[in-house]
Length: 155
Ligand code: HEM
Image: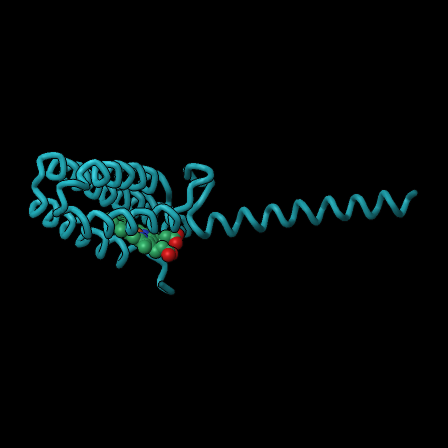
């Protein structure tokens, strides 16, 4: 009986350790904790943003696809807004003023992407594909800057 209790206690401790380690790993990836929305994953959102932009770029000149383009751009806007609320791992590891500054800069860049996404939506609604493609180029410029500053080096 006593050894069963001991074994149960040990299993409990192991589960707790496993949960804590998973939490640490999640924080590294920029999920959960530290003001981040639970359940959101920056890597997943960024991949979704990439997929959406590429799909828009490919078919935006086809007027018959306007409704689909509007759906894609709406999803892109949601992804950007959600990503804006997540603190990337590279920033989460900073401290003090440096961290506050990096968070403000990250959010500012994401706001700029969101503004461009709204312009992209307008140009699609107004059937102006050339304008839409120009806006996408501007978004890609912000993307390059954002990745230079905030994306993990190993990528
Ligand atoms: C607007 C267009 C953007 C697109 C399409 C985009 C796309 C991507 C993609 C495909 C990844 C790699 C995901 C993976 O496979 O690991 C990524 C990662 C990342 N991007 Fe972006 N990105 C954009 C803008 C930005 C901006 C503006 C910032 C910062 C201000 C940013 C910060 C990051 C960070 C921190 C990661 C690493 C995420 C992680 O793995 O935790 N991105 N992005």
